[in-house]
Image (cartoon, rainbow, N blue to C red; front, side, top):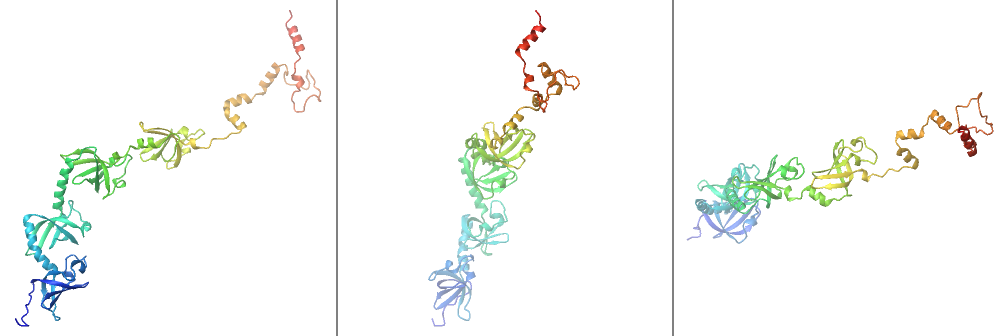
Length: 429
């Protein structure tokens, strides 16, 4: 063979080549007989996220397909990914005919679905990505997934794959294992997958259970998102099972002590706690001290003084410090006191005496009419009638009568001998 009779490579041929140099945008290869070629970066792999040195290494022998014959510099353009595809197509057709489950890496998000590298470029429709249809498929990009080949056309270089098919099979297997080993009352773990107005659906591994909003907490829950969020891993109690309908009722609050039981262990009589006034009635104020637990401050326990109206002392929304008077977890009752924390009122003697008696008693004991006074003095023989300047039985010396008009002490004294003589005169034997 002459020097000019070197073998020529045709477009589409697949040959062996050795990597001699790696650059960021291309890889240089040696195909023998002093012939060199170049593989553009886009022809290395469908996975554009990988760098060239992550795909091939210097000295590695690889299969390449001829894309273009020698250019002006005598270099041939090759494609590694197309050579790999040609090699893999035979295997893909065989796997499709057998119905095998294969693995592939999701490499790109496309309109209507995803591109999956299974050796050749396969397409996964959005409807075949998850068990339940979703438009958000970004979370799958970069993941290695298990898929089934739904359609293969080698001539058109088309392969349709389904991840949903595999997920359904896995779920059925997990469902069988779940029903074989579960019972009401068991504690299980699951992941919140979906929220509704009435609760949350939790994936228990092949079976979805319902966590109803009424079983999320002992206190009233406005919406499920106040307690759990999508993606949360939660521990739950199985409340009810129905294998025939594949329904599972779950409870979150049931794995925690009842609030009143926990409160009974936590608090004692005399403890000081903080709460918020949530309701006012004619007989007292209800104070929320824990989620779902309200205690009562009776109107008599609001203040040291008599309270006419509850809202004279507290208002709804007030945050108050209160003392625990009594707690009864069985009856779910909590008695609280506000006045127990108040400073006791201090009285001086005069104020205390005036407050001690009622208004009626004070009038009777203190106020006397002029007529009553005169009668009282007349009975004692001290004073009879009102003195008159012209008719006076006893004239008192101006020096002996005080200017204040008070009676002298001598006039109030009665002689014992005189009294005996008067009695003798009035009662003759």
